[in-house]
Image (tube, rainbow, N blue to C red):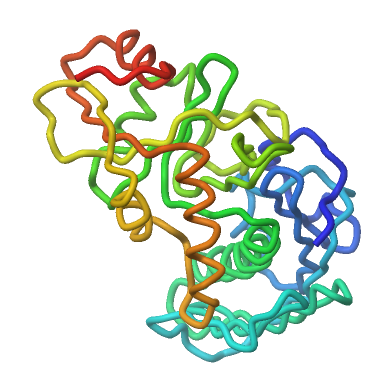
Amino acid sequence: MSRTTDTLGANWPHSVLDFAGRRITISAGTFRVALTLPQHPIIDSALRGYGWHDPPGLPAPITLDVTLSDDPPVPHASVHDWSEAGFELRGKYVDGHFDLSRGTGTVRIKMGIKSPEDVLRGGILEAAMGALLHQVVHAGGVMVHAVSLLLEGRAHVVFGHSGAGKTTLGHRLPASFLNEEYAFMVPGPTPERWQWLWYAQERAPRVDRAATLPFGNLFAMAAARDETRCWPLETTKAPAALMPSLYWLPGMPNELLLHNVLSLVQAHPVRWFSHCLQTPETDVAALIGSDHDVR
């Protein structure tokens, strides 16, 4: 899948009514998906100020035509007929057909619930994340549940389970905070150095960013909170540590997942990171940005 032109990523909390043809785009670095939204009284209020779509008028390799249904959301998501050309999504909030070879797709958001604005936002994001995930994975990359920090000109990623302290860490370092929730990473010009992809979101600082940044350190959040330090994770255990934090859907090919994960941890060895709130912020930032382990 070819990438779009390198652009600046930005939060764009403007009304959907500002977009010609009600077409919005959502990007992960230089990867992008467009969605054409239907006329509906709650769409503008549901998306106003949410801050994860791009400025108007950007090109995208695939455009999804969005419709709404009265079907209720379902508990789990899966994909079917996954190939480099496209896939079928049976999502929590959406059902969709994605044809990356032709650059078109259709998405039906399941609105049969009492909180339609939340479902609408969730459906649009689920559809967009599916399309972005497909592009990133077939470029050799991964999508990880993590917090990302900008230090020494590089994006550093800290992953871990919900409640591990990733968000707390990010908010302690506001000058370095890039975003949370998702981190997209793909191989760079050389296999030993990957790139981090900017993804705008509501909680991220509202400033322009380069679409891609050099990727730095990769950390697994440790349970210990008594001191701030980092130390190596055994190479053979790194894939298993990262797997639970991957954004992955049942039905995607496992061999592709494993290949991309192994490539990432070989290029950027995983290190454990423990975070104590009593450690000064400057010391925390220096440790995350350093290439040396502190035991």
